[in-house]
Image 1: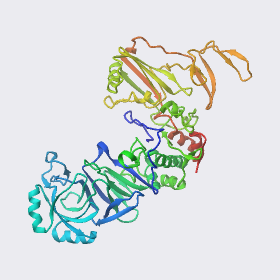
Image 2 (image 1 turned 180 degrees about the horizontal axis):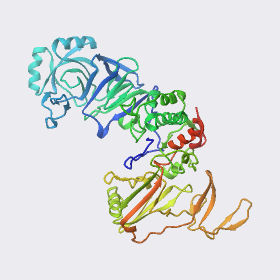
Image 3 (image 1 turned 30 degrees about the vertical axis):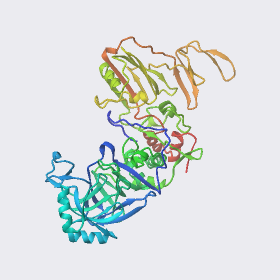
Image 4 (image 1 turned 45 degrees about the vertical axis):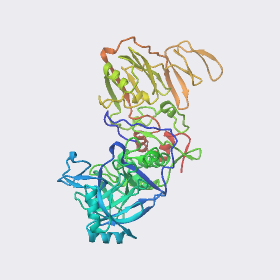
Length: 552
């Protein structure tokens, strides 16, 4: 999740309210995907920031580490085994066309029969090779040959046999050199684990420092995924300052810590497919470890985690699965069911009197779309209605958030509900998006506000409607609006009904204006900040934004 959507391009999306595949945290250890899928790497570097050297091994199912070997080198690179090309600057590539000049061939001479890493490492030094752990056995590999025949010719001299690195192997080198330190391959059954040596280590990877260890899954060949393996509380410390400012009020940071800790234990949407619990971006919750030269954990954010150690959110005695949050609600949060389609007892929307009492950057937004842009966006997402002639909010929730958006075009009409009302407008091509679930189109709250009957039916107009008071008296409404009592308090509902404009497209542009940032479900982060500034405790903050919960 993300605390500050400061640009139009950054859209927070949650695939929420889905049952997890498995428990997300095992043995108090979290696996965080740093690079995977399309962002996986052919070669990944590590450099000690605190600590000296590394251990090589693998993680058991209980996430304990089994050590197989070690190096005193402080800068190492893990690279997909096979033919490796290296350019003059020491960068590694999978092909010569990428710029590599020096070739590390995929054929080697393999010497076998070693009982320990020390024994294999000793023989490797004498032969100019490297120790390896292949199919659960220690071996020594010598030479990087481009052709099988070359390896076979050399095998006789060393008393070994010619072998070829497989598509699931990982080679460890001293960074920017051809010096191989270790090779690991278990046919994809196990992943190479690398643990920095020393106490309270911190390791550079791609511009950020991380605590804990690293894992490099390559079960089906291809590039390497990079996973940070870190203790739960240290993980939470690496989330808080990036989801909220590290110097925000302590009570707000404590509320965020409880949410982050609950979220990671309740979710494991990446575990089944990718082998880690959570990613490190807005698709899960932002995690940047010990930080970089910019934002990083602060004394206050660390204290917030320590003050709440182990605390999570429960509903009906069960750990909640979706301790979701968003940057700002713009006036009211929303029922999870109205956004994601599944009712959840602890995700109930309510009018927010606190958020307006603090400064919320970019809380108001306005974005303009042309008819052709909207037509193209719908077409690309498989929802073509021809040329868009009109778009309007066709239903608001009782809390004033958007529930339905309707597009009218030359080829038909399409209505979107819930979070799709926001996400349908997102376009990376046009670099445009709608920031929240609380918006108007062309300056009008143009939906069928109306009055809901028994939670399902809806009056098309309020004027002339009959109502029964609490005392049983029947009365008649007059005018276009009325007050209604909801579970969140008294709200004003409108009877204005917007009909399709029959081809009018408002001068060719559709202007969407709104307040808030995010999906409007769960805790507003800026609302939490406001409550903390007003003297509320973290538990009071959480009990306001989540319904009927306990914290323990």
